[in-house]
Structures are given as C-alpha cells and as structure tokens.
Image (cartoon, rainbow, N blue to C red; front, side, top):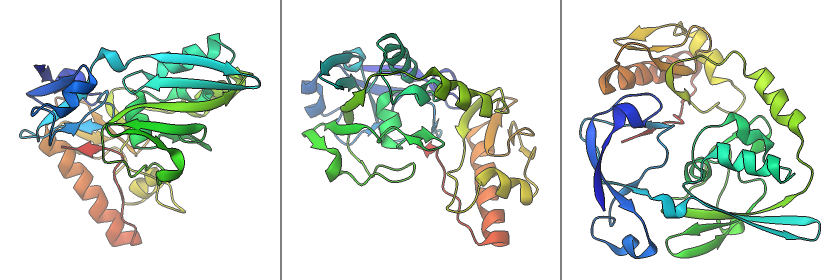
Length: 265
C-alpha cells in the first residue's frame, strides 16, 4: 500500500517534507509497479530527504522478526530487515548471546545497518553475518563485498542470518557507551562523514574551522565536529550547503575526499 510520511518527524535529523512511500507488506509486493524503480529506505537514521525525492519504498511490519535456532555451541539467528537494533540487542542480552553487544549504541533497523555495514570501533554488523536475504533470495556473505562502512548492496535487503555464540558480555557495550559520552544531543544523523583511511573526519572538520560552524539552522556540533545538528528548523539546503562546504575545505587543505555516511535523496 502507499501512504504519506512526514520526514520532518520520521528522520533522525528532522528535515524533510511530506512524501508518498510504498510499504512492502509481502514478497508479492516486490513485483508491484509501485515498488519497481523505488529507492528502499529504512528507519531514517542516516537519511536526508530533498524537496523532490525519487520514488521511495519501505518494508512493513512483516519484516520485523527474530527467529532463534541454537545448534550445539553455535547460535543461529534469522532477523528481519525492519527489526530495530535495540530489539536485537535486548534479545541477545535476554538469551545470553554474544557478538551483538555493540548494537546497544547504534540506532536504526537491520536493513540499514547491513546496507552501510554499520559498526563501532572494531565491531561491524557483517562480522558474524552468514547470509543476506535480498529480493532474489538468500545470498551468502562471500558473494557480498563488505568493507569499512560499506556493503555494495544496491538491492532491497529483507533480512539476514547470523552465526553467533553464547556468552553475552555487557562490559563491551558499557565500554563503548563510556567512550561515546561526548556525543552531541539534538536532531542529527549521528556521524555525518565516514572516517577516511588514516584520519578522523571530526578532526579534519575541526582543523578547517568548521567545529560549531552554522549555515541557517544546521551546524557542525561544538562537541563533536562530525555531527551535523539541526538546531533551528534546518532546511535541506542548509544541511547540503554545510556538507558541501566541509568536503571542499577538507579537500583543499588536506587532499582528502570526505564521503558521507548520510544517504541523500
């Protein structure tokens, strides 16, 4: 079915208008004319919507599930793409499952996490993943080119399978939480740019004088420069102008090309 979404309320950065999306509630919907050619969106945590976005689709509640299958020392989970990271973390904690502790500190749904190979510190969502369910069927991890904050997947992600172990370790998530106490509050994407190899994006932005810099209602945070904050009803143009300025200054001073973690539609 199609429905209207107010992206100023749906996305974490609180920018965007009201646009029509097609909700996929079954596998049959994947062959609907409403779905064909549409851009799949997830939970809106790394999403910036323009005034005139392309045709969009999102998965419905049928893809929010966790199937638990313990096999000897290994634990196999099949998880739907619309399942939120907090739900996965709590399930792992309640069932003494290791390897997913870092999800406590990452917002979003599984499909989006896989799309950008999300992670923290040395952890990534692809670490213990074995298969990804795409519209064409189950695909082995070996057939996917996962790299740092990148999956290369350009198809609709419907779910995934993981091979995990028992022994939930709360100290991992607690340690990550302690290291992230400086994260700014307010409407944002989280990290705006991927850390370039050998650099930290926040440090590069600070070095070119953009920490705390504002255009319109958008600014790079005074606490952590790699967080773009919507502090005063920022527009799409405010956010993209700030992003483009950052990329230009860093490229000019350091010869480093910044890549966004944000999906701009």
